[in-house]
Image 1 (cartoon, rainbow, N blue to C red):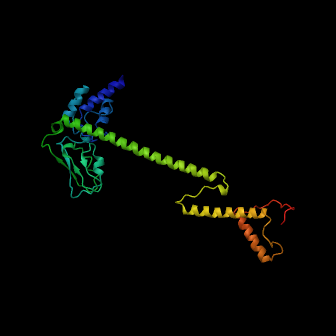
Image 2 (image 1 turned 90 degrees about the vertical axis):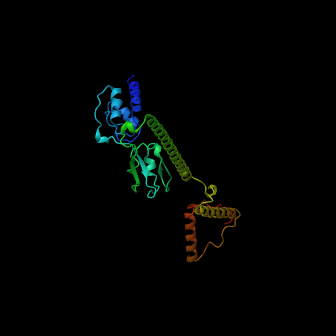
Image 3 (image 1 turned 45 degrees about the vertical axis):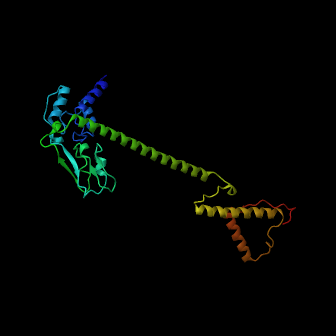
Length: 283
């Protein structure tokens, strides 16, 4: 029951906030600040855009005294709007990313502009601008706080903020899903490569090399030639047509034979301990 009452109270407090989403209260948006007030974790005088009237509204709801604005969070002032010096703007998009209500339009490396009717005067676009081309211009004369803002404007700002938050969450989830899919694909490929490498295979049964891997293709051609030579040698041996003149050779020729045999052993073309020859067969 307490959780339900607290949630409802937070919603009612949120309705009394100006929805500028400026974070001056010390919270990332108006709703978290409302929840903190409802939970007793924040005071009800930390919203400069709401000003004295905003404090009075929340105090009446909570049954608490009206207290002065905590100026460590800012001062009550006429509502400003952001204005971009388009001759200086470099199109970095940092101001667009900072705007909590999507009041800035533009594209990367293109000039940006502020939609005045949508700007809440939150100031959040000013700090990230690397060329200091954004100015906050007061547009309400001497009217401050809720006198410089209206409930319909607050409601519209909250709707835009909520839509932006939902969009960013969808984009984040999509990016995370894409990254996970790439990681899963890399893991699967690594597992397949590991299995193919560790599994013993006869050279003659080796998989054909991918067409886009010249080195693998070259190795496959060499292996195929070696396989053909091995097969030819075996067939000739069965027919009794083995190499001639292998006895009584000179030391130099024998050295060449020994070197060739060593190379064949390294290539796996000759057994270190061949089976004894059938004496009934011709040498």
